[in-house]
Length: 420
Image (tube, rainbow, N blue to C red; front, side):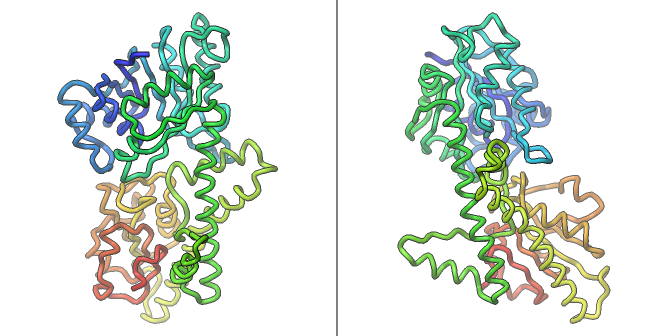
C-alpha cells in the first residue's frame, strides 16, 4: 500500500504533532479541524499549542507545502481520527466527536483507502466507526460488513508524554489493531513511514483495551500515592520522605502524590472500562474515586490555612489573598485538560471571599471559567501580594524559587517541590 496523502482530523496535542511527523516523513498532510484559529495559525507556519520541537517541524513543512490545514474534509489515501473523546456527566463515553469525524471522512472515502482511529475510546469503538461508514456508504465494502473489504479500518492509540511528544511519537512502540488482520498490516505500513519503535499488531478490541489498561494501571498506582499522602498527613509524616525511603526496596516503586490526576488520558480512560463492566472494575473505580476526591481535600487544607491566617494576622476573610501556582495538569506544558490544578483553583475561587491570584507562565489568557473571579499574575507579584501560597503544578520555574523570597509562612505544597 503506497500512501502519498494523509488527512488528520483534529489538530490538537496529538493530531498536530502526528501531522508534522508524517509531513517530515515525506507525506502530503492535510489537517482538518473545526477551530478556524488553529487552521489559520498552522497555515502561517505557526502552532497554537505548547510542545517542544513542534514549532520548527510545522514551520518547515508548511513552508515547503507538505503540511496545510483546512476546515473541510478532502480526499486522501489515509485518514487519522485524533479528536477528543470525553465522558458525559455519568462517566459514559462521549463518541460524538469521533462520529462527526467519521461521517466527514466517509464522504471522501474511495476503494483502497485506510481509516485509523487514534482517539482513546471504549472497547468496540472501531467497530462502531466501521458501522457508521457502512451505513453512510453502502456501496463500499467495509471490513466487518463485507467478506471482501476494499477499505481498511484500524485502531492505533497514541502513548506519548506531553512535553516529549515529538520524540516519543517516533521512538515508542505502537499497538495496531485492525478490524481484520489485513487491516492491521495496512495500518502498520503507515506508521512504519516514521516509526523507529516496534509496530505490534493485534485486533481492534484488544488494541482499544490495551490503551485503557495502560492508563488505568497508572491511575491505580497514583491513587495509592494520593491515598498514602492523606494517611501521612493525618499521622504527621512527610509523605515524600516516606516514599523515598520505601522506594529503596528493590521491588517497590511508589509514584509521587499530587492534587489529583489530570490530562485527557489517565483521568478519563479508566471510566471507559468502568462504564462497560461496572460490576467487575471495582479496583479501577475506587482508584478513580480516590484521585477525583483529592482536589476537595486540597481545598480543605486551603480553608484551614485561611482560618489560621485570620487568627495570626487579624484580617477579615475578604482581605486574604490566595495565590495558586500552576493550572496545567503536568509540569512545563500549557495543557489544562482535566487538570486537578484547574479544579482546585476553581474551587478556591468559588469559595474564597477575597482575591485569588493565578500564576501559569504557559498561558496568556485565563479560561472563561475564571472571568471576574481571579487574576492571572506573574510569580513575583503573587509572592509579594499573597497571604497564602498554593503550589499545584511543579513547573521548573516554580521549583527554582528560593523560599527565602516568600513573605508568608502559609504555604500549601501539593507536589513536595518546596519542602527544602
